[in-house]
Length: 507
Image (cartoon, rainbow, N blue to C red):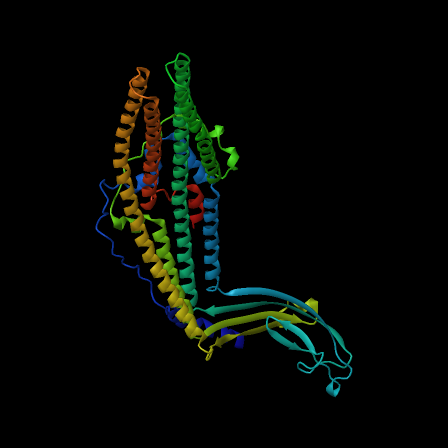
């Protein structure tokens, strides 16, 4: 009956416990209101939709690039690591939330007792005397009283249950922090996705540039070798000097010496693409059709989007991750503040105890201990106060990190817009320069054959043509790569439906 009354009393106190559980200490989180400019200083084009930004690389119109990005999103090791961190964070949520539930454990014990023949008063094991304990089941202590030298067995089967009441919200704040951390992990994964797509595109465009420059130099070498053959023929006929032949041989050798570094640069880019795709560096090449792309013109960059600076707060995964980390830091203050308050725990230890296995499972073998417990740290030398101050500083650091991330994002976009505008202007100037250099080279050859100009003029114009073509190829690649950087700065390149992260992020 006493046990029943204890249970009824606990049930009657449940509404009070529920009322107290509504108390959650610590500050409630509020999303910071960051002030951003009304528009980007370098923006000249209209904004694009999120759907376009999510698959921005398709704007290049290059099927090879589309295939490389798809393979990277599927097989890249960094992206898989990010997905693993998300799954880990999900498990940390479970760990944090487990404290809100009662814990239950089962135990079983067998004890053989031999009572001392020299026990006080001729009795053995008086209430915990030497050698008299028959064991404990479920937190219950039993005593053995018998004649000296007596042997007996004790069988025990029971449970230990405990429940720490979350009266002041320590567990709820911990769960809140864990969930915010998980969300931050999801956004960190998407930031990895943004960086991955940009890196694949940037590396691919750098490969195309190296191959294009290699093709230009190979074409120039063929042109120089043809010119050398003509000069040798003219020298044999007495129409050119030996100096002309030596000068052209020097030009041929100089052009040939530029080919190995360009070939090595293309190979290095190819190796980097292999690693980004989760493959051994040497495996990517002819199988992907990448070895001969330099003979074709590089892909044309798509129209540059701009949008509003405020869109960055929504689109940039690194900003979203920093904001969730700030939320987690705020919740952790509540976890620290909860240590100022007492811990109240309800415990129950039902057990069956008997000296005979045959009647262990009978009603008479029941043994029950139940009751609340309170623990309150009254003095700790300022430890709790210091922990609250530490958590507050962590929140302040997270807020500063968030603000720095926003400012950096704005800078990234402005820098990319400035570079893209400069690239377009320079590309037009270089195109005119290349056309002029090509015309000058053709005229100098014709005039040299007519004996109107010395051969040094031909060498000068040929060198100028090669320099102009090579510079134009480099700037074309730089223009495309700066467009990639702009899309990355705008937070483009992630999609919540991409399988690797979507599976990990699903609850």
